[in-house]
Length: 580
Image (cartoon, rainbow, N blue to C red; front, side, top):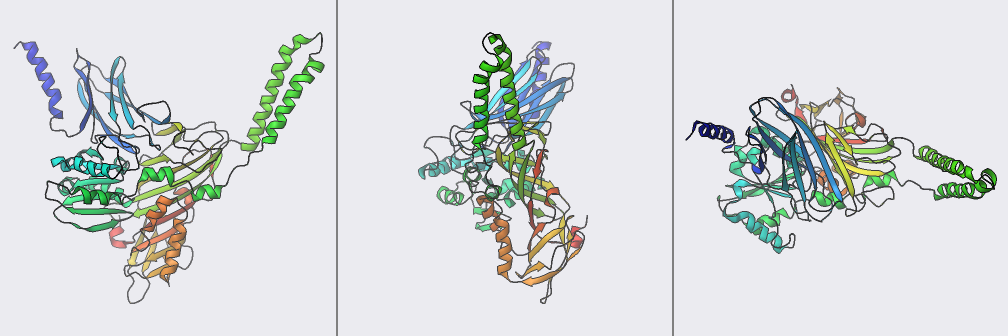
């Protein structure tokens, strides 16, 4: 072999070796410049794109140039066919040093697909000047079936095919189509709850679970606490266990065949988030309380009538009469411009700039030393006037979702088959059609935020004595209810200031249940059901925040929020264990 040939071989081998053993699914690999051996490769730990949520994507670049390169990485989440629907564009910039191998990890936001038409796809583009690499990752079918993730370790003996056949036989999926789940590599997922947000159910072997890093296991646990269903296949089968608002199912498995009928029957009990986004907000309490905006057509009619009279008879007889018809070239544009300005002034007087909105939120607090996370669910409705800007900053761990709301002449989101919306994300900013001028929109936001807020347990209740609790949340409370370890119910004697002991008095279980019922009634049907799973849990508190605006996630700055409500729930933690 010639020396030149050996050099090319060793360069290729050095490029391939870092990828040997990687378990991700390859989306594409492109030789963007043969002369310098510059190569771009895209991979994902998940085989197919779910119909909402986020997708982990890695872009690996071998820069064979003797100088650094700037790259633009673009992700387009959209329907495979047609021009309508919901689309999400996100853009990033990366830099590769000269003669280097770099890997760039992204958690890509996906368009929330609310209809049941063609599946979506993710288009990936990586460009640097004339260098370009593109590829597509296909999406999952969007039906009323659950969004399921199926780990690679369970795929032996055609397990996924057998499950798919049972799902098809029950009418959830068309025969001969896609598998009923997307295959994924658990060990390649980043420790970010958002990569699981596109799934209702995750199926995982116990061996894969135990091989995960502690941070990755906590990612799964946090996803479960917000309503996810996790199925673990190991040596023992036990009844499902509740964890927050979700469930963990333990299956006995010999490492070979999964019982398809029993597993599918269990999967059918899981909630469907996409169905909830499509149907669960039609009777949303926020929209009912918000009411409808009146529209007075007589104002527009009178302006148009006056315009017709002025631009016609008055214009022809008074300003541009016989012998002065040439003035029509001046008077007609001036009249039209004046009418337009009058309409604009009336719109501004009626709608104003910015908008108004209402928000409700529920925080499931985890204050244990190894976790310390606030899982937030926030629903909000807005009515906008004239918007001068539509971009806004968003917390890194937040997920904004559009939902189908009740019929209204002011919304673009009341028919899943007629929606056309373009969302954007760039440099930590969301933009596009999240907020439109002179419209109404209803959104749900989920987030996992680091926190040191907690309710401290100084001393458990015993011998009929009230537990001694302390408010270390960092904000005041309007009310506080608590079911202790023995199932005895208590409530605060009044509002509870931050940094103060919580004075408790006993109440019966009916009053405690009524407080939870009142909190549930603030939310849409899907979250109302999930919150209901916490009602009878011992060692669980429920409180309403005194000044909720500071704890809820902001969005468009020109929105004026009115009468926010925020509920917080969790377990009191031992004061010694809770200490930083």
